[in-house]
Image 1: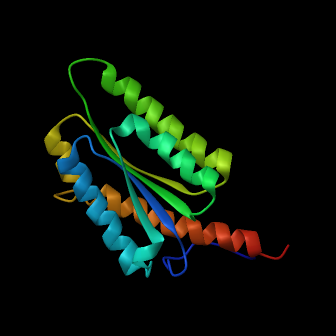
Image 2: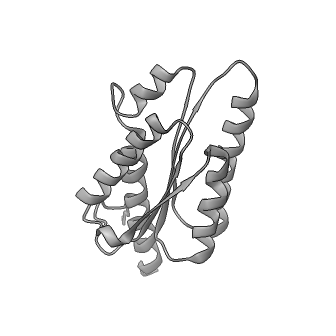
Length: 158
């Protein structure tokens, strides 16, 4: 039996990180978590591009542009959506999630999901490194593993 899985070795890989400026108290923590993981995985600084977009709704379009350009091995999407008093949260969360997934499938590229959806600021802070891990770190780990897996699948002999 043969088995393939990705590795946490980012040497020679290129990453784009798309991060929302909205809720930047949280998204900056996500970004720092992602950068820390990429550095520990051996990704060189010149192979990391951080792109800031106004809000979470803009994340899929920026991710799509990087996928179209074909100059990165994975895109890491970071944002924070916090429920308010109107259904706006539900609409944005649904579209951001759908958009990120569509980019990954359309372009056959790892696009990791590091977008926090929380009911309160406290929940979002907890998920950005205070109590429940850092979703930015997790998204970066996923991106590295999937980028190496995609490469291995592409070169695997049939």
